[in-house]
Length: 480
Image (cartoon, rainbow, N blue to C red):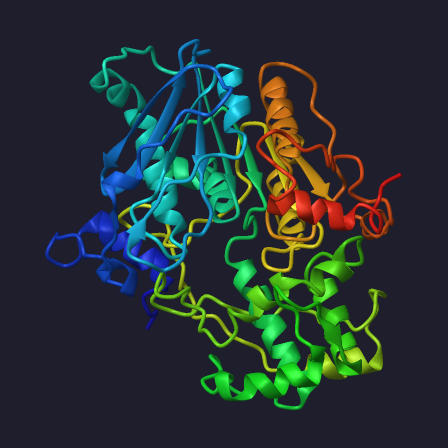
């Protein structure tokens, strides 16, 4: 007797189907709660107002609360009709929300642009909140202006820029997935994600691969995930890899085993390239190590582990072919396995960790420093490969910057990226960028020189972090 066909569904497909069908009693099945949903956050109203920028054109400045977020808006008296949304980076795990101003604020208001920035309604690495709250503020722009006595026409163009986690917010906000699933939908006209987590959850894969590689080399290999006794093992692993561990007060010095780890990390973060050595010896290596020992639930943003190292290839040299030693290393290292559908599509909006699928229809210009050990240059390579696969690389321009810290850009570099994006979006030619995926190109000692500009502005005094950073590198990494 012929058996009836059997139907199998993934968890994501099943939950979406239940959403459409209503389950057995025609009621929508509620999404499960996660730790992030139980946390409370608040913006302190007194911290939101901000002062006029000295020497800049006159503006109207408004601040307040919107849907659980704090916000700031600045509109020049001679507004050009265009709005720039700014997405800030990771703000930690505290309960107090804060708003930051864009580094290119002076340029924007001098050129007549209005800008707006949200605190987001939640801290932690909550990119979903970042997208929704940035979009909500963009949609409320005219209402807020009218409530403050200035009736404005709807923006003729709306752009989005962001740094670090805000770069992830930016890339997710312009993606087709956000256009379909976000609760607050905004059609942006152009974007500049800077130092962004453009590989979304693949960043966590890198950090897990980094930790397990260090443990394997140190002779205390991981056998489970998460590594519950990491705090006990950490001193052993560090001392096996470094004679001096990198920090804000010390430059990292590696042991012989540590040199192997350094090569592994070089290949995991973008391959042989300028600035890697000084970046690896710097304090953002300490920042990356600060994430070790965690599970793959992104501190409660997810309910299940999203991290996987099953497809990571560990290399101990700069040759693509695996040596016998590399093959043995890859065959024996512990492989972290993700929970299927840990970051599935939701029925109530965006994924908990929104995707950067590179499905966009607008001009995008990105910036990334070559020495970043926290959100590495490989994020750009992942994004480029996704854009190639989606057929959107014609709308993508990427630029490598010869900096060593996370988001280590001058204002001049950021302004140039924004200017070029706007000119392109307005009908001008596609601006120049860097090839981020050809290994020989990236390894060239002069790579990154084309768009690195150490010119400081009035907002970057000699005492600023960026001025000090570039001054220290001026001789050793000069492009002249």
